[in-house]
Figure 1: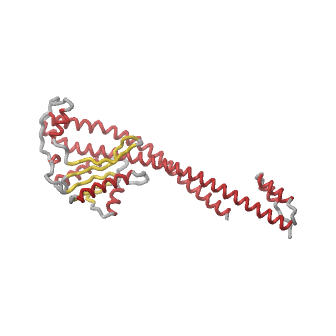
Figure 2: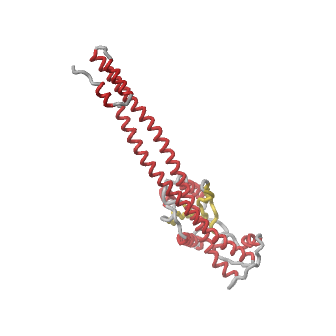
Figure 3: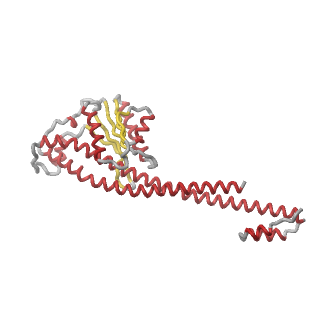
Length: 326
């Protein structure tokens, strides 16, 4: 029935309008959070740059350290993966892109006969790989949208222990790098082992800073103490980049959802108006048919009723459309 279709369309429009309010609110929240996440990421970069600069100066000054984190395995038999995703969905392809990249990396290494170890940061990656029966050695969650340095330290220590115990020979870090509000890309970085002091010395010598500092108690002791902090700083930067990328992706996804809701409301409103027009047309035809059958061809009253209906005067329409008793 036309009236029933109109009610159904009206119900759908109301439901979509409620959803639109939610997506709009989520868009505004994500926009606020992404600004804060960008500020935190920018605030953490000077520390990461400084610790990297000091390590390069130490290496360029001749410091040589045989630190376990620098150990290069003769043969890579097991590869560890740190996979950083979000705890929640509704962020477009943010989580899916990281998971697919990680799965491709795992499959590429396993096809070469290597083992793997997964450290999933975020509920989405953990639930995906657990559902597909991948072996997950470590899973952390609850801080994807607002990570702290303590979170980075905990992850770095956990992964470093696996590397130092030779459970894995190499560790890859997979996360989403924040480039701008409109651009985020999934990257795969080697996390462990760190580049050796010879390569650090080459990077330091390229800046012309050789021997510009004196370190106490010794360059080797300082370098050995800084290397664990260096891993923590790198991981903290990755967590902050991932958080900013998640909020930016969620903002775009919610904006697209809001725009789609508006477009759908417009289409359904047109359909509802058409259904209402069909109902009016049907009612007119019923009135005309009934009047002709009862009035013996006299359509004067019908013309008055039609004029009232087209003018939108419901009361006049009801009076003029009355039929005489049988």
